[in-house]
Image 1 (spheres, rainbow, N blue to C red):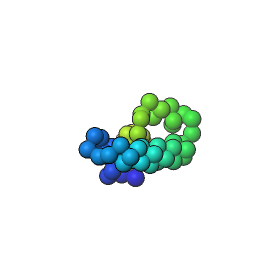
Image 2 (image 1 turned 135 degrees about the vertical axis):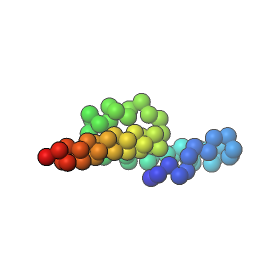
Image 3 (image 1 turned 90 degrees about the vertical axis):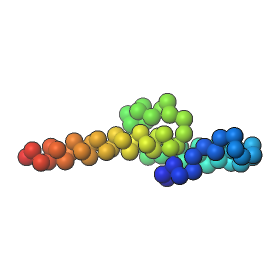
Length: 74
């Protein structure tokens, strides 16, 4: 899941858009189901799987950076 298939918008048929929305909804649910309630609160207002994925990626990038800084200080 890397967002390589963004919302196709109005450039496609309604049936294709509906199919994309179903797949995006499944991906969104799959991502959410792997986190606990506290983490879900961070992304509950986000509407698609790409935005949820990007939010978690940015959070964990910051955590990784903070961990590296703390490790180097020891």
